[in-house]
Length: 263
Image 1 (spheres, rainbow, N blue to C red):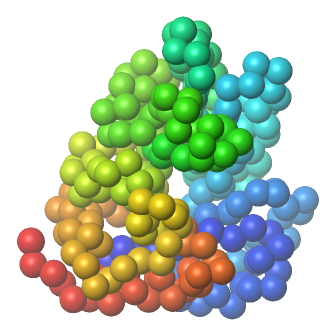
Image 2: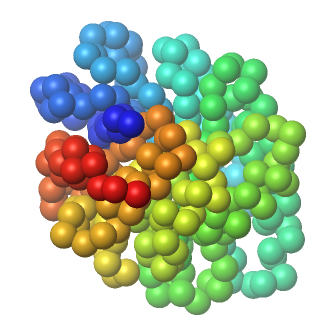
């Protein structure tokens, strides 16, 4: 198996750093969306996904957030990009809100999943982690909120079942799983038939989007797992660019892959 490794770039980075794609198999496009398709048409690699906006829990913003995701789906369909990934999840401070917010999330994903399917675009949702700052003002508030969903493979499978029969895929985020003390190789096994995209980065339980630690066994186990399930979709190196370049991280995974670590 040869991993399909890519990096996330927005349109401004593409204008100045397109040379980074020389060692890249694919690209995940980040917001904002380009106003024209000129640069996209000239790329030497395929754009396999657009990372769209997230869905939160603020009632006044819910409809606007859904409309923004729908616009990203239309963009992807127009330019032949096969997948849109979103952070779709909920948190709450009052536990009595769970049923209402979960119902809204399921209905929103049914709406968006159907819109994507109509345009032959895959809608993928990402597993979250406890301190996901897009749903709370700070880590302290996230800690007090008591519940963020979906976090685990079991959460993702439950949500997929609730949204069914509308199709919903998974962008599996390795670092997010590490943050909530889950073993990625086990989570990947459980979600294997639903994963269409992977975000790869390390995590020390305190900081997210860290460079990959190749000295330990984590990513060796992950690569063995991906080989075992026959994973052939993109792996996007989603590392804090102030700490390491996506290209350096791609080279790390290439080296691990070439080691052909035995099962």
